[in-house]
Amino acid sequence: MFKKNFLDLWRRIGTHGIMTLSTCSENRVTSRPMSIVVIDSKFYCQTDITYMKSRQIAENPNVAVCYKNFSIEGICRMLDNPFQYDFFINAMRLHFNNAVDRWSALPTERVLEITPTMIYMWDYDKDDPYIEYWDFKNTAYCKKHMLKK
Image (cartoon, rainbow, N blue to C red):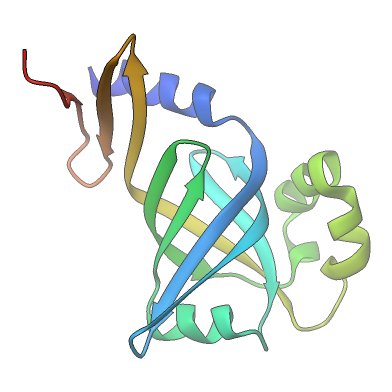
């Protein structure tokens, strides 16, 4: 059941989007929109190592991404300069070429790789609200209807 729903999940999320990344450290949560690409079930974006979000990720790699009606929890890892990763640059050029031209060559720019641990999706079946859960740690899926019948 998880595998079938897992494939459907990635079809629904798609390959890219402007997604909101939230980071937290020292009891301070911050959020900002990011140009994110989805490759092999992971989320990738780029940022400068001098920005607050980079410092927060270094202190606390637990992050959240919000996109459409999806809430994504995950672990973030900071990689090297974007041009060290052809798969990333190729995907970014396809969807966010302007970001590559403006930012990727800067010496302090880094790729962020987010591996999801849990994804939730809110939706409706007619007038019946439900939440779908994809638990990556336990490879589990469930769908919970919110109205009691």
